[in-house]
Image (tube, rainbow, N blue to C red; front, side, top):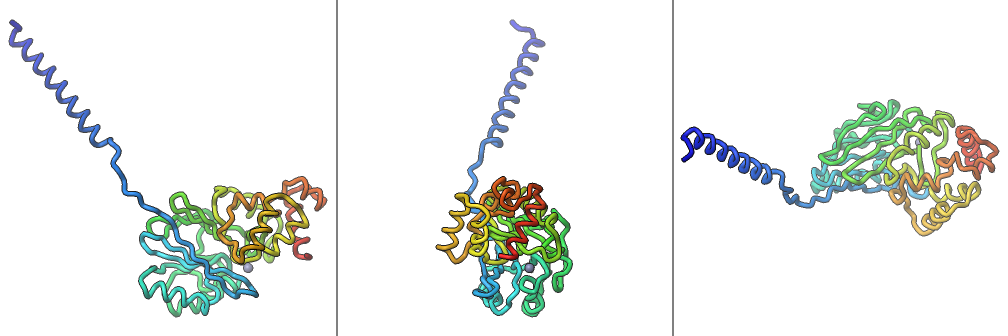
Length: 296
Ligand SMILES: [Zn+2]
C-alpha cells in the first residue's frame, strides 16, 4: 500500500498534468486560425479630365471605399470638377476631406479658391500653392479613411514645390506625379535642373515598388512616344505606342516598372541612349534628352 505521503505526491503530480493539458487545449483554442470575412480593400481612383484638347489635365478623386473619405487632387478647373464633387457629396457617396496639390502651377492649384467657396477643406500641397494649409515634409505620411496611407515625396525641378504622393491600400499602390513624371516622359525643368530631375525620377520615384500605378497630371503620352521612338526603339516603347494609339487615356494603365522600360528619362544608363546623345554621365544624359525634347 502506498503511504499517504506518496498518495499526496501522486495526486499533486496528476493534477499538474491535468492543469497542463487544460492549458494546452485552451491555448490551442485561441491559436486556432479564425475564419476572417474576406474584405476587398481597394482605393477607388476616379479621373476627371479637364481642358480636353488643350491642356489635357487630370484631376483625381480618390476614395477610401470603406469609410467613404475622399480627397481631390489638383481640381484646377472647377466648372469641370465641382459637378462631380456635388453629385458624390450630395448623394452621400463620398465625404470630401482634403484638396491635394502636386505643385503651384495654375492648371493644378488654380481652382483652390473656387473649390473653397463650396467646401471648407484643408489644402495639402507645396509651399507656393494657392491657399495651402499644410506642406508635408519629404517622406511624411498621412491617412485617408481607414485604408489609404499616403507618403509625400518631394520632387523639385518642374517647380521647386513639386510633390508626388504615393498611395498604398493593402496590396494596391498608386503614385500621383503632377508634372514631374508623365507616362513615357517628364515635366519641363521650369524651376530646376537636370540633377534634380535625375534624382526625382531615378532615385525617388524609381525606388517605389515596380507595381505602383502612375497617375500623371496630363495626358501627354502620344507626344512622349513620338519623341521616345526617335531616341530608342525597344519592345516596351512599341507597346506603349500601340496602347496610346488605341486608347485616349493612359493614366493608371502603366506602372513604375513599365516606366523604367519605356520612359527614356528613366533609362539614362541605357548604352543605346548614351550613344545617341553623346553623353555617359546620367545627369548629362538627362539634360541632353530634355533639351532634345524641348526642341522637338
Ligand atoms: Zn506644371
